[in-house]
Image (cartoon, rainbow, N blue to C red):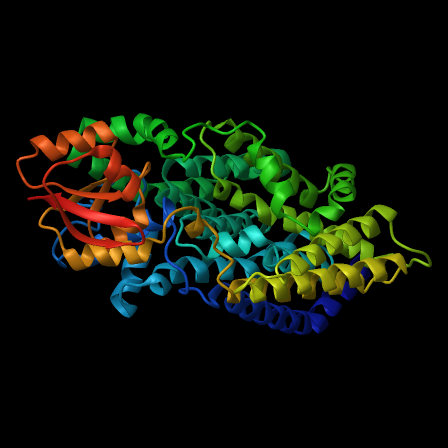
Length: 536
């Protein structure tokens, strides 16, 4: 026993520097690949409504305020108090504005770079829970080539920062099993998540607690863990206490009770989604890696007594259940679950690569790749027929079709190189998509925001609030126009027009203007079929 230990120690000392060098090389390669994918054409499209426009507006008002003011502690949105979320991400974007000015690129840069850092972090997680380095490499590459990860990570949202902090917290959980001092990192990162997402950070904290209880319950009695939680939660409690003292009862009423209900009214269709909404989102956007899902789930369940399988089971099932119980659902709420899927698929792909086959892989894989190839080919052909300005989409679908075709052929032949083709082809396809203007399709759901915002800013109305006939608020329009545009019904618009003491300003389209039948109309300016009008 002593001799074996001596040999193990001797070999560890001999090969550990080599292993560390290889790990550092992979970390640098993964970081560079992620930075390229997350930064290319980052500022080429306008900000999205709802999340991006709101975050950007809050950050801009923090940046615009004087240095001695307290707006960094008491943020505002359109001049009104904004205390729905703690301002950690808003502070980062405001700092970005102070360095590079206010634009789309500086708005999205902090979140994009933080999400890019999560790619090598996932490699570190894989190295902690998997014996083989290839499993960690595949996990990081799969995570990097998931469309929801890249697209949501590039947007000016809170979730990219939350996912990065979650990975650091999970890494501390795993390393604390060898060194209890890492428990401090668990609590500190939990506090930072709550300082970004508010009380919703408790959902991610629940995932960690369930895993520790199942895998290493002794950590729950470590004083390092509770000291870390105390250190991490103090800034959060400080921020919430400051809001409560400053705003009083309205803060408690709106933030803890009213906000979930108000979010229902901000959903375009006005209705909460079904319970299985997130399962549908995963099935829609996680291809081609979902091809391996049945075998992966079975393999994880068979190894549920091992730590890596327990981590993946808890991470996916607990978080998916908790967010599914929330009535109002948004596609980006599922973001923190993708690293767990990437770890699962990464280990499964390593097992596949270690197989020595003399025949084809499972027929279901080959068929799935073939179907994906046909769908992508059909997309490329469709956008090549009489669709001007769709060349980028044609090339993107062609790249995806070529990738799936080669993967199907190699899998049919039993050649394990189809895995590398999948990874490399998926990365190239995503790179082409991000370089185009089609990675961000929400602006096409409503009228172009920037021309209308420029028109409003050019007119520079004397009032800050403008009423519009558009059915829902557009935070991006508020951001670009530097005015608050408030949706109103026809009845309300007619009331404001007749009884407002100041001359009201309305933003209406032609059909609304015809139906309103307003007297004494003065057209201030117009753009994209929208007119800014006021009263003589």
